[in-house]
Image (tube, rainbow, N blue to C red; front, side):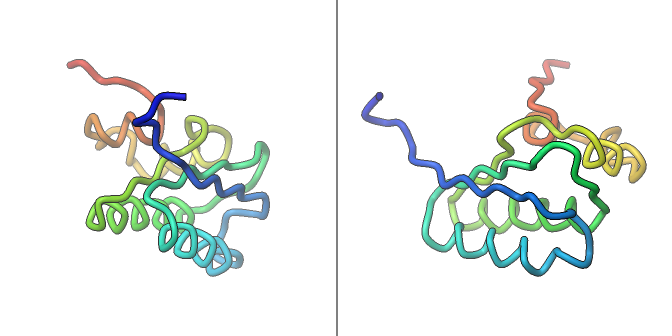
Length: 109
């Protein structure tokens, strides 16, 4: 372990990622961010997602950045989360930071 390695708090979401469960997911993220400088959100495979989850994660990213903290995803967006990003037209609008966050891609162009 390197001395400068940052500690990450992992949050695993395993419920449906939609408006019905968003308050519970939000509470988990807020609690984790209040006690840690970096959180990693792990989305279990096969979960259904809607736009409210993407909006919540984007809000958490911005709030974390304002507090000099960091939010990241354990794995690139896949399944229904990726489909939501595509349907909403967000992928086409991604900047480098967004592509790195959501897709774990380095954009060089």
